[in-house]
Length: 118
Length: 109
Image (cartoon, rainbow over all chains, first blue to last red; front, side, top):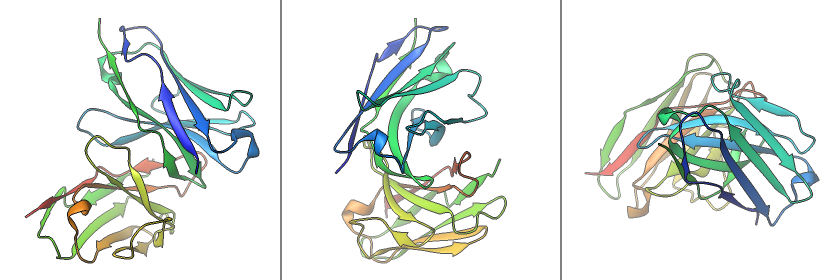
């Protein structure tokens, strides 16, 4: 059973770059067939898709965040990463990584809370 | 962008009763719709994909129906562990786009 685990700083200063990594175990990112996603949830709110990446490096981003988002993959470490630049308090959220099968997220990490504050 | 609207925002149901949750798309998404369950402090869990196919390990009391713009998630007999927030999500134009509904909270009556 594939498992995903987010890691990264829980506190980021305004205007800086949020960086998170998702480590995948129990399955290989490079085996293909899946897209690897980042999704966030503002406190007490609904879910917002950020973007996803295929093992080949192809990426798709939410248009509302596209100018600030970069998702990358490191198949040698079986990890994929999220960078969100120029953060503000509005980027405070729980960030989830997930494995997408044909457009729906069948497997999720436990999530990590990132707070943007000085 | 396809907008997903869920109703009601909150549904109060007694254990053992049936719960019916609705999800409407602003344009047709065919059967490219998923449902998720989220409990407090936990990640969402996939329940249904393809509008009506249960994910692995999901009990038969959960069923999905609909196509086009109108979808329904039915929980036939609510168990205590079913009280949670439920989200629908369309993936008709995937890749790249997918969007979530705002969620329905199912609470104990």
